[in-house]
Image: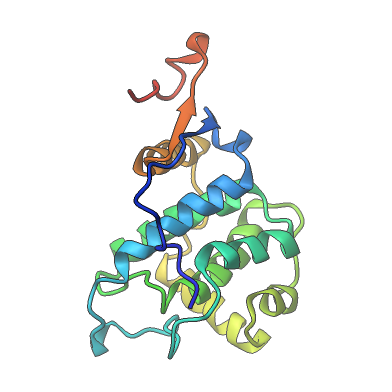
Length: 194
């Protein structure tokens, strides 16, 4: 299995990212999102926590590689990637037993990308294309999409300021990343962390 948790204990170089989420390199965004999932794998799985999003076994593709595959084959926009974190929070707030782990994340992500693209973009792929990219049958994606929008109570969009705050928090949670904030724009959203 391919995990992002194979981290060396040597200090990693600091990666500077732009002030605003819409300017960040998609690869950095995917990497930061992928690192968040590793922590939740330590939570024990209970039968009452099983959902349509659970796989029987952990997929062999890492979360970062799966996101990379989705981005490469769907041309997903940055807001659609970043809103995935908001969707995770919304689902977990409404469904206390739901946890994003290596058993749920892949199916959750392909459903969330499908929904976010339709909610936020003028053009998007078909469900059969998203299913092919995600490695699941179209009928399964259709069922996951319906389950997903029910789980988040159709709350599919958010304000740009919310996306920006999630980006700031995401960068702050990843010690290898630092936002570069020009001095004349310091007060626009968030000052740089020390």
